[in-house]
Amino acid sequence: MTIGFIGAGKVGCSLGKYFSQNGLSLSGYYSRSLQSAQEAAQFTQSKCFSTIQEMLQNSTLIFCTVPDGSIHNLFHDIQPNYFQDTYLVHCSGALSSQVFAHLAPHCAGTASLHPICAVNHRFTGYKGLSQACFTVEGSCSQLLSQIIAQCGNPVETISSEKKTIYHGAAVMASNLVVGLYHTAITLLQHCNLNQDFAQKALAPLFLGNVHNILEYGCTQALTGPVERGDTTTVQHHLESLSGREAEIYRLLSLQLVELAQKKNPQRDYGEICQTLQTELNHRVKPSANTGNCTNS
Image (cartoon, rainbow, N blue to C red):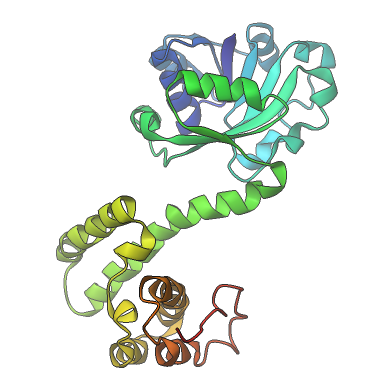
């Protein structure tokens, strides 16, 4: 099994390096940028290909590590005979293997593989992959699962119908956390605290919560005014916030009420829930979760 990559960006370079470190055979890289392909090939001690056809001829398993919008038309001018005995895989978290449906009759199998990991650099991102879980989906899921298991990573199969919501979950735990943290820093800056101090001040709070979530789970990690049922403090927070910050506070606090009710089933959260719902229902339609404010 020889692995090739179309796309020499962060994910392509990182996966290639990680696979080679774990004893898998790489053919090399093709990219619209010849320089990028050359850099990735040098980084992974593999080859640089000048055409997709050349890549297909020298590879058994092709990873398409290009932007989501480019995947469907990636092979639009390639003859079907080039795909014989070749597996096509993309690494989009949001798209399923159905993006290859037009090529499926011509190749050995199609799939998507997604590392649940923030890969933020071409040449250092591979270091985080050893701790990542992977999901696979498609007709060659079993093959990919064996490859990932060989690398020592946890891997699970997901249905194509669930890919979008799955990716939404990953975004919430990753990208949206960056937005939430940035919001907190901005609010501290409104208190005339400089950015460096704000980041240093919030860091132990943030890292401590991450540790507690991983160690004890979300319910037991929960602290703060919502968990205590401190309606007065929550009301004061809402009065001091406006716009997007107020809406973020309300929506996430409603999620916390649900956790608080599980942690303290004997406590009545009716008042705090009512406070959070005020002025929210006419602006945001409650989901099944945000509507689950009951007295316990």
